[in-house]
Length: 211
Image (cartoon, rainbow, N blue to C red; front, side):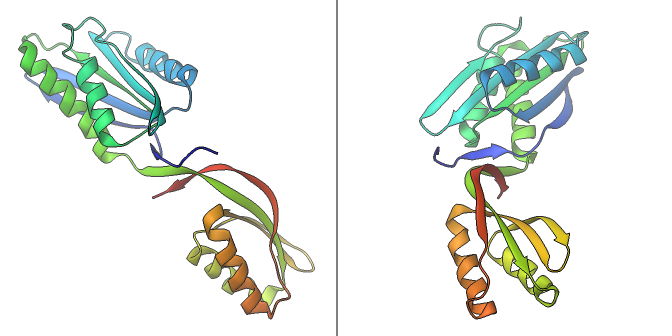
């Protein structure tokens, strides 16, 4: 599996006005070039009456990335490149941004445009929640009812998440843990139950874990 890197947790939007021009920045997690293109197309359709919809994205993370940007009709180098530069500096991977501009009647000049697109992209980069795409174990665990609250707390302490609970003769819990945290949970479970309980891994996959 790939080395973990930081990604945005959700799609967010921020807006501000620069000398009567309205700038709307929309940022989202994207996990392929096709997904990035679909996101850009959706924003362009939403703001089809805008003067410009400037896109930039980084797919992947670390040393293995695919990058793209476009000025979408703004003077060369004044919009797409500044937006991409902010994404590069953010440490985020699997991220796309579109900065929408409604022209306000006053020319901003080259420096003003660079500053406006930089600040617009920074506004969403700084506000978005962050997580990591990491390998996780999904596990099943059957426990007596009297241990339910303690096991819930124990899972949380070991960075786990309770994905489901089925109440029958026992409680069957579906749990998810970062792979690196799972052994610690198993050890704590054995101590709690004098070696009688153990979670069974049913799937190993990648998931997004909030930082």
